Image (cartoon, rainbow, N blue to C red; front, side, top):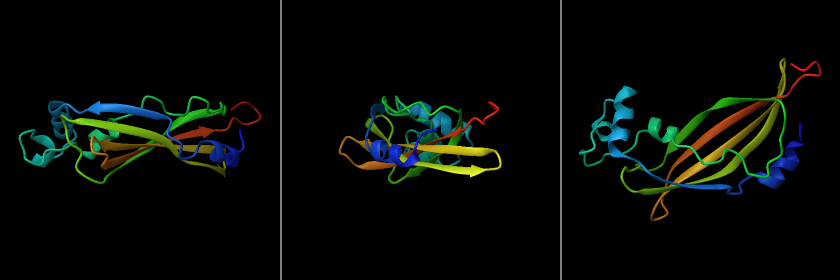
Length: 149
């Protein structure tokens, strides 16, 4: 696999994707209800403070997960999970923009071998440029061992 420091120098914190969203109020409410959310500000589109739940924000994804010129690392890629931080209410029915960059690149070694972690961060903004939420998607790439496993 590649040199981690070189990947960091070339790719960290450089925006590589931008995607526009308009969250449909009925879908936002349905996801909240289906995930067991009891609060009306997440489940009732007529509520004065209606907003997308963190579970809904976690479902938003960028058009690309890595920069177009990011090198193939090889190995076995796996979903390493998501983390959402809502900084302000995320409204439904209005234009929003997601801007994505690689936020972290690091590796770890253990009994199963070396793994590379890539954290793709999408920051969600409203039309006024207010930063509403951050959605981190972690990809783990397990290095193939010398016997091919």
